[in-house]
Length: 430
Image (cartoon, rainbow, N blue to C red; front, side, top):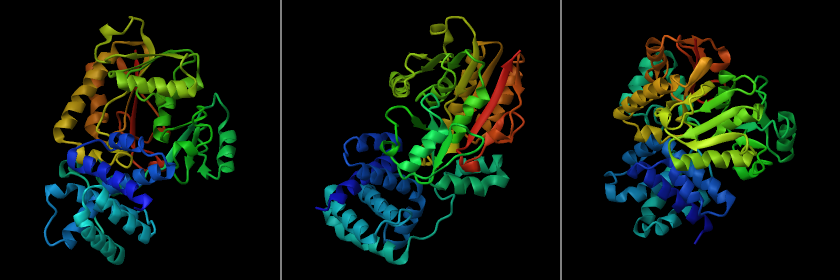
């Protein structure tokens, strides 16, 4: 059997779990890729899965148009395999011969040998006629689409288009291991093209995303993958040299690591609520050589009495759990799994976290509230509510590096300057 069939079958299993079983795309990929040795096959499986979930509305329209009756729930694995096949043709544009043959062979690997002929026929039609166009809002649930339209009526089309596009790969150079210019030269030597934004001294953007194994010195901690909008958090928090800092929802540890790369003298405590998430922080710090520079603890930010020693923090970062509507291009399954009740619960949790952490900020200290959401309820409205309830805090101005001024924080929308959607509000305690 064609070697590529195993990669197609693996992708189909991931897509099936995400589309039909409500599973996390990143979680399913993490499990599936661990069993694949070939780096090229891993990249292929990941690309097919992301494209299939991102364009599932378009692929569903194709099947609806081409089939006399819709596929039933028992045919969920078949639908997932067809989506993997469609993804190879558009947008991945793989050679049609290889895509068709390997995907047809994969039907046997997922127990659908009796439907291999159907797979062949539908993929050949997609190759011949092309996949039908679909509106950029096809993948969005109606309730969430209405929320985005209410919050950003003039930017709606741009948000949807950016959210449907493949995200660029941003790198953060570890300045403790060398300069950005020196790392840029290493990338060029490895045959990788990158842009170096003038106003972001640690950031590089690759023209084409690559696996981490292809990045020079990744395992040695010379570089990390982190979107530019997330890299801006360090500048928004801007702790003083040697300050006492809390990262309250720190996993996987990238923002804390960036702070320490700039100032190893920071007295930084990184906490998260779940032990597996804390393990990810420790792994991040170990790879970057930062293990001795910070404390890492499993702790609930909502309950400071259980972990706080009573000494106030000069700077507190709350990168709060949120709807992730600013990073749909990186997590397209958000659109499948979010429900209105989820948003209500997240807004309530964000408010509770802000209220709890206000008490651990030193007089004159900073509380930076950040999310990867674009929804007003989670961002500007949340800050307005906090300031009304905490008159000892005031909003400090940020500049255009952080997006547009909402009146209660700064909002970067998806795709602006190539970045993810992100919100920042810098709050100083009197």
